[in-house]
Amino acid sequence: MSVWIDTVLHPLEWVVAWLMVGFHQIFTFIGLPEASGFTWALSIVGLVIVIRIILIPLFVKQIHASRRMQLIQPEMQKIQKKYKGKTDPESRQAMTQETMALYKRTGTNPFSSCLPILLQSPIFFALFRVLNSLQPIATGKKSPIGPMTAVLAGQANNSTIFGAPLSATFVHANGVLSTQIVTVVLIVLMSATTFTTQRQLMMKNMPANAMDNPFAKQQKVLLYLMPLFFAFSGINFPIGVLLYWLTTNLWSMGQQFYTIRRMPAPGSPAEKALEARRIKSGKEHKKFTIPGLSHDADAEDIQDTPVAEAKPKSGQRQQPKRKKRVKPTGQGDAKTGPTQQPGPRQKPGAKPSATADGDA
Image (cartoon, rainbow, N blue to C red; front, side, top):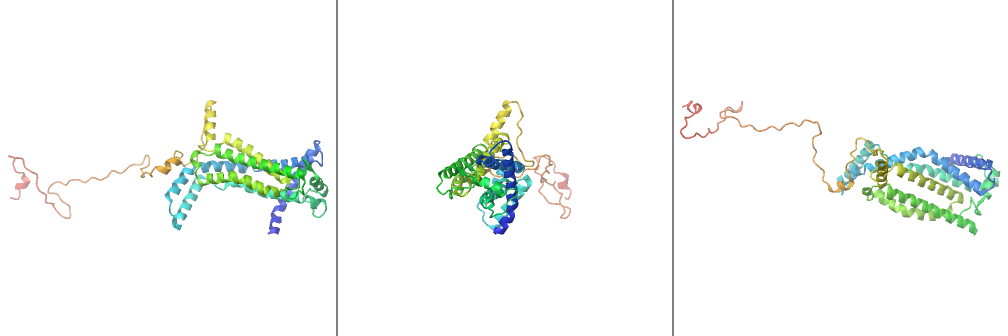
């Protein structure tokens, strides 16, 4: 398992080292101290910016996937209502097939929203390993990683920010108060930025009818669990990794603020605010739609409105129903012969009909 992880992360460690050293040289060239912790901290910030710029196309896909997921919620609730209370394997399989068919028909990928986070995780762990390798590289116990030579690794390892080394952790602070204070401040800032980002997403970019679905409930739980996760896990990460995490959180918060303002989810308060701004400025507001999907249905109406009977499509000719015709007296079917029926009632004083007297 360890060999497999080394094989996967080694190229990423090499990329991380190149970016850190590259930004370090740029900041040194413009006059920042070579061995300063702030110079190496800014190098980590530059690393974050490069990674997030590379991930912008995936972020755009994530936004489109999120908007499509919001639009298909009424259709999803129809499927859930159709199979509500059915726990047999056939019904569960049919429900899954209809859900997947809906995803395919609308071009929706529910996993697209996870791609930016999943692709950042290897970079995160690669940076963690690079920072942990600074001291072994500086002392010659480990080979250099790309351009991270023993001299540069020694500078980075001995550099401090507010008196705390970038490679130090809260757990291994050895009683150094400055390291513990910097670590706690970074953890608090990380938790605050994560909470603000998630709360902004739920309060402004989610329709009211989507707040009761399982995904929204999961988001509410994560809103309060993530700060606790940072508190327990952050004490084990080097200060440089915490700085990376805080920087990417700030980027995500700013990117999301821009997205919610310019490309909000359909039916959300942010979309209503955007529509009001565009109408006020005299611009046309075009709502995001999916071809072939009805956008008039509301999730609240789906819960209470019974399914209507199928009606003929517009423009389709409806076949007239055949009416029963009363056959004239004396005529029958070609196979069975004349049908005997009682003759019509005669008015008083009227002559008998010729048909009635013909056989007499």
